[in-house]
Length: 561
Image 1 (cartoon, rainbow, N blue to C red):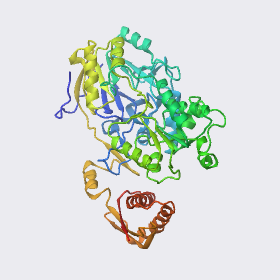
Image 2: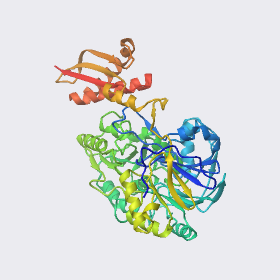
Image 3: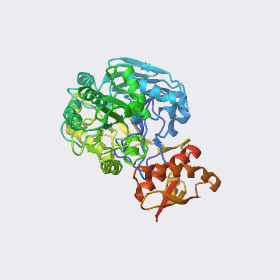
């Protein structure tokens, strides 16, 4: 088994007839998936996704793959193949195309529709080639064919890459649901044929390699959703990934059964579900979906809201509802369903949202107390089955944290792959396939590239350290004296800034906004000091973001008299 080492040097020039595989993201992490294949002086990219920041990366919006190693070779890039439409596989495409706009994008119908809708927001019109399972395309020196795979989003594909150096299979994200909602099975016969013909290298999804057995079918969550709908006394709010078409289809089916109208909340949710509906991947009966503005016109027991925020993202709709910073107010006996998994690292944020919703009286249904989610990634039993069909000569685990990669490699060894033919790499490590053997050849520069507002790549690890110390771009303090009986502000608000680059005259513009928000809170009976502090943080934070594209720490001080 190969192990990456910090002392790895720059890989030598690729020898004639060899294939080089260099992951620029997705190894040692869940997200930021991007792999570069090099042969005959040309580059083929598979996926180009984003990673979402963790709490120790304050002020960061997104984390991109590092394009440094290919930046001076953009003319050699023949295409980007997109395996499916999740953000961790397509989210960085706009940033790559801003550097070379005419790189062709190749993918299935839904995947291309989702990325085209995203690119439209960036005012980019891409060159695209739609492909289907069973199709073969010559892309530069690469012969690419595509296999259907089952995942938590429709139209996912695995890609087979053939060159004189050998045949490589990149699974993308996949599982083996035998009763998929759309009837589209993972092409195990195709994998078996490839295995008989000879697979020199497979890059395999590792996310669930530690989980024994087989992943349950998507159909198995239907009873839990049905119970949630049957027991809901008032509004029902379902939080899901904005691209989880299958899950949202089940919600729509339940809404029809229980005679409720559905409203989509959040820009990405509205955009993606519109795309899925227009292409026929989402079946929406006439009159079922209403505009969010019509919610208040219906009795609460006739409404279902479908929104983002299942991972506790601070600015997503559900988090803002939990913190009383959204026009939709959670009230006693509303039902909230978190129909998603817990991505590692998001646990605290998710439970904070659950607690906030519960505080306002909501009945919260989540993975911890009901079967409202099944994974989209193959578990250990499925991976063993896959390896026995594929019979790969070399295995390179991808898409996962280090524990997932190692567990996946161990599964490959159990099925007969020699230990020395399982390549444990990390982002930036180049793996060469020469004479049927995959070996680590060196390492290219490959760090995190942070997106912060309009800034791309300007934030360094040193900058993040300073932010953690200074509190995310300096701070703004707000002093408010509040009547402890009424919750109303008495006296004049004081707003001061340190290190945020905003002077007192500029700060004066936010004072009326704070006063209005606190007055509204008092009218609703929200008067606890920490609640008022949260309201001030939201108001000031939004104003600073919109006005200055900055995100300083907001320090509200409430003095009760």
